[in-house]
Image (cartoon, rainbow, N blue to C red; front, side):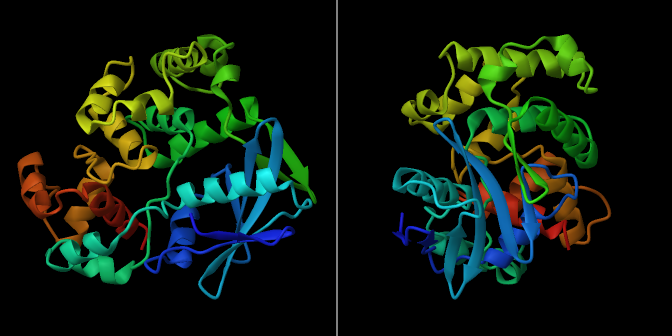
Length: 302
């Protein structure tokens, strides 16, 4: 992580393949988003360090990510934690040089990587949030998924009010482990999804499941298998979490509807590709399937 502490603010130096504007476009894709706000070219994001809430204003000036603290600068420990969170959120550890070389030779990705150069996977560093968001989104459209997330966050998440604006944190697994299926049904979350979400919260509260435990397995297939043993987590959810939370660039949510639609639009196909056709298109993406998928998703917002 490359950053400098200026006490009242911090500066983060991203790799050269980084485009803040492109990341903003992706972050701004839904007006129902409740976990960050975009205002005048900056992202406002609430994070929690130990028991304290820290509001970050994240902007970009002359190739540097500038992070300010509108409520006042927290301690050096909290500033470092903020830098670590943002570094992971924007996936700044990845060296995209290899991906761009590969994409440049690929008929599907070639135009996308030039168009969206510097876009990075916007991650979900918190495992509970990544799992719950993936489960909420199963078999419903994205707008309704955002509606459910908004209700869930506003009912169970912590918040902070600053200058008349409310900033929210995703609910903690500790909190959700104490509620009932009926509580979630009131938000229009289906019975089955409510059971899955509470089950995962309880597994995390009991110490059976954590990001650290998954990453200790070190092997992609082992982690995928472990995730799919959890009730409510199928192949798509496991792949999504491996991609968005655990930073596996070879993760490939091959059954994703958005991915299929993006390929149909991009290649001007008369119908969505079959699984076999999709695997053919993806033959050259080895090791970078997650980034190929993310760039294809981005093309849906043009």
